[in-house]
Amino acid sequence: MSEKTVCVSLGELTRTQGWSVYRVRTEASTYHVAIAPPQAHRFALLRGYSVGAGRMIDVRDSAPRVGAESLFDVAPTSWRGKPLAFGTTVTSPVIEAATETDAMLVTAVTSALVPLPQSTGPSERDRVRYPEDWIEHTEAVAAILRHLYRRPGLLEEIQRRGALHERLNVALAECALLLRAIAGKLASAGSVRP
Image (cartoon, rainbow, N blue to C red):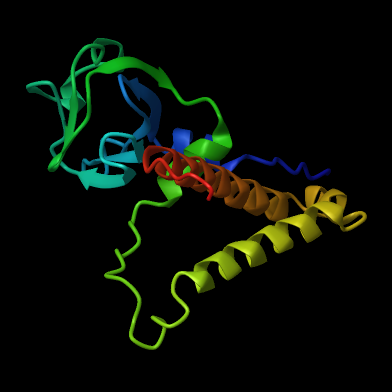
């Protein structure tokens, strides 16, 4: 009797568990909307960088709205022209809503259901180095990714190990989302190099 190994991406597993994830483009921004399966406690998640708000949006709501209707009662094809409302967050009108097909993005969106606590600013101990320490942290992340890319045979070895490969894909998808959000934040702040 032979055994067969089947590799399934977390994105595909997420969809088979009943999650629906959509890429939503509004007049100003692009978001992801994740809708939990009906058998779970019903809720939806809105994630993405809001150009209008100038920050990353990460809102979970059990009663989200599309215009005046419940998001759960309206097919994504009917979202066009209506704003999405998640808690106190209201988007500009939807221009396009489509099922997200990138399994890595589906995983990144649904695996981050608990938003990170918002910082109130640097502590007194960190104030001396703030914000220089954040630049150093960012440079360290860039160095790690550079080493990952340049290390001979490492990516091939990770690819041979299915679970590690999937973890790397999820982490890289999350990095891509965050880089896009940070770039949008810098662009909307009108940051100009001296």
